[in-house]
Length: 49
Image (cartoon, rainbow, N blue to C red; front, side, top):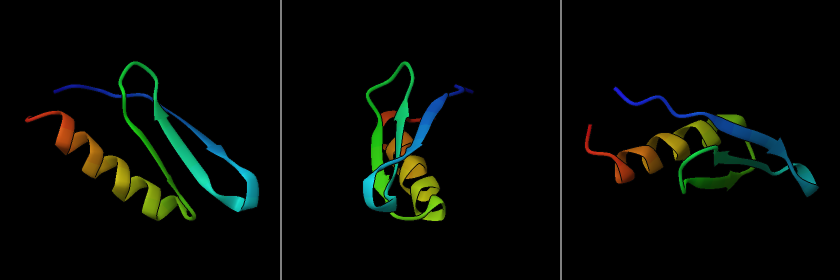
């Protein structure tokens, strides 16, 4: 199983962004719950595990 590390930041207007440290995965949304869901979806698109 592959482990990914994300850098999560709060941007202007309260938006949350997440960038995978060693992979080309990025997401932005307004809530942490939505951000977690988007990152799960992005991982499944990049990796077939």
